[in-house]
Structures are given as structure tokens and as C-alpha cells.
Image (cartoon, rainbow, N blue to C red; front, top):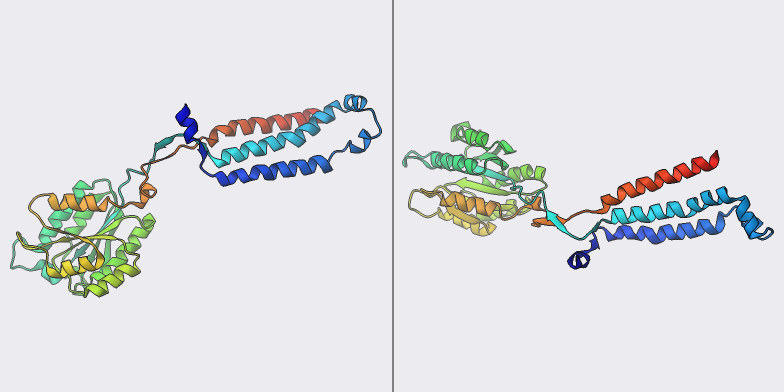
Length: 308
């Protein structure tokens, strides 16, 4: 109990400013709206009170009843609280948008399976691991195209990724700088929350150009999954761009360690958790709503009874 009183506060304390305003208005009307003020100077007070008993009750309610209602309503709006509750949004995973490179080098036939085929396998693994969590897909080459906006049906994302190839891209190339703003537009539907995952074997755009594109897009959280030949490090071009963006790089692995790292990084930042808070203060102001309703009903009843 002591701890509860220690934690007692108002979520919206600015609403309490309405209380002195209500008191000031009530005082003003009490001074200026007394219909018996002239009679009080000419008539015995006891006799005047006896003759105006019902009217006095109604007048008292009009003066003080609505003032009390205004004060109680201000307290309710201010949001009294003294304990925390679990944030219902804290466990919502932020959306992740995959930027899949469909450049010619991804489909090279000198290595089997080629980088694009291995990328599709990794995307399928990622989709299974993120089942129910928003996952989107953009394919890019010389231009960037939305394949799917973030959806909880991650299996569809894996199915669509399986159909991506350089042959279906209208413009050949490797323009990651065009894919980043397209992905951020998808995240805007989630109030900007979420992150990007670039799946590529190399990046042929100058790191500074990618950095400028990333900055103009609002610097979203971004990471790279490098589809390098088995047993080799990420291509230097990916490392250079990642350094310019201050991004992390994971290298395609034979186990799930790369996917584990990608998921951990993508869940690190989430605007859907109300600035990372896993708990929030529980609202108790609504418990005053029945009190306000009862007082209003009582006030109308008194006025109706006095008018009969």
C-alpha cells in the first residue's frame, strides 16, 4: 500500500489546470447570479430560507453540483495511476523489409548453387522463423520494385522471392541506392518502425551514393546478408557500404547462425514498443466515469423535481 502511494501520480497532469479554472468560474457565478441577493437585505434570513427551500436546493446544486462534476471530470482526464501493466504492443515484432538483389552476378553459373538460389533458401528460412511477424520484399537491379509490402503471411514472401531473377527485372544493374527509399516507403505504413535487410553478393554503387540515399530516407536500421562463396568473407564492396551506413554484415552460413543474427538485429529497435517500454502505467481515471454519470443524472432529476 505504501509503495502504491509512493508511485501515485497523474499521467496527464496538465488536465488538473481545469480545476482552478472551474473554481474561478463557480465563484464568479455565485457572486453575480444569486437571484435572492436583493431580498437578503430586506427580509429575515430564516423566513427567506423557509419560503425558498426548494428553489434554494436547486440553486445550490446549480452552484456546487456542476462544480464538483467539473472537478471529478478533470481528475478522470488527468489519469490517476499508481501501478504498471504490461504494454500490449511491447511484444509486437517490428516489420522487416528484404532488399533482394537480382543483379546478373547473383545468378552466376560458375558456382552451384549460385548466390541467388542460396539467397532464396535463406529467405525461406527467415520467413519460417518470422512466421506471423511482418515481412516484406523488394527486388532490385537497375531499378527497384515492391514485390510484397510487409505481411504476416511470411510464407507468401518466400514463395514470391523464389520467382525473382534477373530475367524479370526491367533494367539490369545493381542500384541499392534506389531500393532503400522504396523500402522506407513501406515502413512508413508502420509509422517508420522496422528495419531493412539487404541480401546481395556485392554492391556496385559508390558507398557515398548509398549513404546519401540512406540519409535522405531517414537513416533506417539496415543490415546486410552477404551471399559470398562458401567459406569466404563478405565482398569488399558490401563491407565498404556497410561501413558508410554503420550497418552490420552477416555472411551466408551453412547453419542458422546468420539468420539468428539477422533476427536479433532486426528486433533490436522497434517504435511499436512505445520507445522500448515493455510496461506502461495503468489508467484508473475511467473508474470515475460512473461517478460522473450518477452525479449528472442526479442533477437533472433534482431540476425536474423542482420544476413540478
